[in-house]
Length: 487
Image (tube, rainbow, N blue to C red):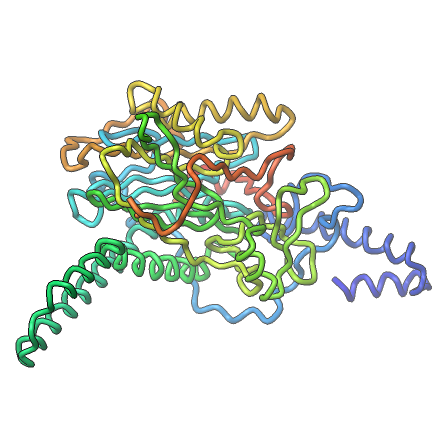
């Protein structure tokens, strides 16, 4: 791009006139924008097509990303979709990823007005063949192939998490066995009562299941992100997804989160009133720790003049891509500049006062508060319609609060506590509301203020997750190949 600019400036016969040079930049930028649209529609390029019209002084205008400098050679690419494997996943009892409900959960997603639905969701009861365990997750894709990335993570991440969980449990059992053998062979005396009580307190504060699952979450997320770089048909260089996931086993709740989707718990206070407890932090670039890491890696963090509340991540030398989150799967154009896929993992011990957990993408949280969401869920009868009620309320709020903006995709999972998933006889699906089938701690480790909202849209007309990347527009070949939405 720089060479093109210099060449055109040379043709003008002047290299010193700033006005002429600026005109050349704009001209080249316009040509590059047109080419990028064509590339994006053909192969999912990483350039702008659907970004909103910036103000004249906004730094979103002209230059794209250009060549992938110093980008490491990738290993051989994998097939992006294994249809036989997908068919097997669909047949697993207790696994739901379409609009519907079961005895313990309600799911619903709805496409917005921006194109293909890029949100995905999942509830997997009897997770890992454990009758008291449930896995839930919502995923918000972005970029040209965001809907594919979200669905790939939805399908693969739970499997990887289960595999690493089994391995960690086996290693833990082996360590315990070796310790017992060592105690017996060395004749070591039994711990004193005081030492035992201290160890019990430490175990209660940080349960073994949390330590085991935290390690499993970290490994599974790392492997998942690495695999995304090897799929042939899904170019994740400028596409990615958020992920807010949880595992509930008995009274234990472990949450793993990257991006700006959110998990909120509804519980009761001392007056028996329903109150929200936010279980995750919206991992935005303006958080001090996130911004510091990005800047240390030579990435840039700043907001645009027309949306001062929305901090974005930019490449060092180009005003792209403007990602509105600090952690995500994919988006390899920014992985060398501070964007990471390491999840924040937290734990909460559930009590009889806890009612339900809501997982949702930012299409919901941008227009509804935590209090509003739990009130909607708690007041909806039957529970099977709870997720749909939240989405419908969010769509109505979009129309009321931002009438000139495009409604974002919404995905909601409601997990009701106090019901044992092992008693579920069968999953109940509301096929009439199904979207199209898709493409092939009481202590917590985080102290979050009850009822505190993390909205990025205060005073902003509309938030685009990726400011300079086009949305996927399926052609005839794509539609014939696989139906889909952003889920």
